[in-house]
Amino acid sequence: MLVHSLAILLAILSSPGSSTPAPGNSASGSPAPGNPGTPADAQAQPGERPHFETAEQLLEALERADADIRTFRSEIAYDRRMTLQGDIQVRYGHLYFDARRTDPRTQATLRTFGIHFHTLIFDDQYREEPQTWVFNGEWLVEKRPREKQYIARQIAEPGSGIDPLRLGEGPLPIPIGQKKDDILARYEARLLPVGDGFDPEDETTIAYADFVRSRDAQQIMLTPRDASRDADDFRHIRLWYAFDAEGRLLPILSRTLDRKGDEVFVQLYSIVVNQPLPEGATEIEPPPDAKETGWDVQIERRIVDRESRDAGSRRTEESP
Image 1: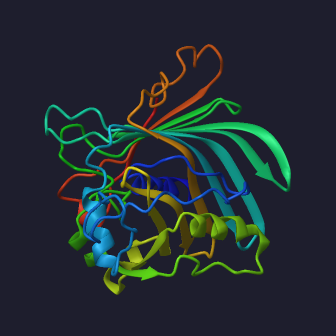
Image 2: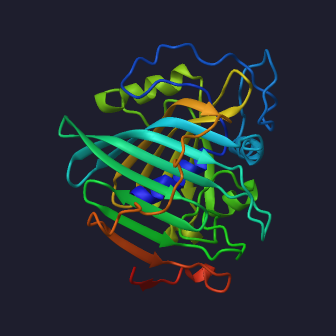
């Protein structure tokens, strides 16, 4: 679930953002000034109020919304609700997104992100539990310092031209930041009222509902079409977007419901665009002293090629 939710998270990073409050904090801050453009434009015009009439208009805007992003960093809340167990787990940390490099073999932009969790809330208890996920375009790396565990999964061949985050090409397909027609071929898309889907009697989601309303956000819901339903892990994906003071369309919240009935909220706040990232934010190498300090290092290959992508990825594993 975490891997797929991170893919959705990268999806909502298709547009830049500005500072927003964390869940559970006061959402009384004023919404960004009304700077929308026409519904089909990702860049808003000063003095106008953001509004899209149809899901197609929003998707068209999102095709171009990431044009000026080079770096993106924010704080993150990852809120997982497991229906069968009745558990709620919330992780807090930082997210770093880097799109400054291109693949010299294909000239495609390399989309790299790192997520560094530091705190877990479970059973109303706070505890430090560091955990890092990094994706560099070829490798998805998981690091758990407390358990001294490092897992690297190769999911694309270098120079293959395969994008594992693209619909139909890899194991981590994302529905946003791609062509509208590609998304609509796989998902039914609907604009919904900003507060749709929130139960006013559910205290655990009131802060989220207040937050998106305070930002004058618009909600889009994606539901897998019949032809792709068996290959999709989600029953539906809800995404909320709003314009910032510079007129950029920005993501503020995602909410996914999987086939088991589990829900995940992902919220970004304290967002900074196109500023330097901390050193090592998207580093995928294991600790230099991993062997000496007893780390369990695992290397897996889940390569996607053009012949097998329609049938899914093939997997081989090799020892570290």
